[in-house]
Length: 316
Image (cartoon, rainbow, N blue to C red; front, top):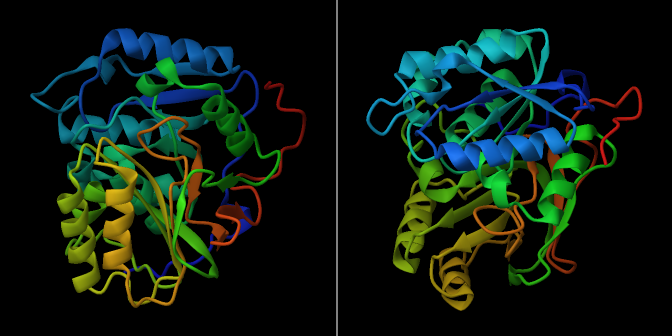
């Protein structure tokens, strides 16, 4: 397993600027065409030029095409010199199966902004660790259809490089006190758990673990976190930053689960960051350093996740 270390600034992708072409991919499940078209308009309104393969609309059961097709489309956009970012349409299920189909050496040679969440957690974590580049946990194309203003503003801040990301759990809860620093890694809890006992599960030593989920009952959240605890995943963490747990029971129930699972650990645990399946869904870079402060309920990145912009981005 690869040690959870910060990514050097020299390997970070170029920031997005107005007019940049964005490759749109579907590495997991098929998607609703109307919401897809609405999401494209949001990308265009932000100043980007979305493009996609003719195979984007393929359906193979609950997959958006075969494993090989989905992997090839993803790699093709990373390799294309005129594409500045790769943005996922939807999660659902399916990204796990393409991990063993990807050419990570090819992707590492072409560091680019890569955005997704939910089932795309498999790719966020694995590309970040194996290709030594930050990835971006954030809204997918179909969810941009009804994204709120803070979400859109958060995308612009995180992906253009004009300032480091800082988010606050305004309505959150401090589960365990303290301050910590480390690279942020994680994503959707149930998806992340499926990486356990595979070659793709990362070493979390020194990490701030980010988790979120949707539609899981409290006992299932408990079960997944307990499995990770018993597997030793939390033994060398720097801290835990939990995002939204949408339709997973009351906040009080979720907070009790986290308090019970992390009882006895010395690192800070804060719940309620506005990232995940709720609104807003703020962009969180994966694989670079941040600090977690339970007193201020903040997660603060030390620097932008993209290379320094060379000119005005032109984005509002």
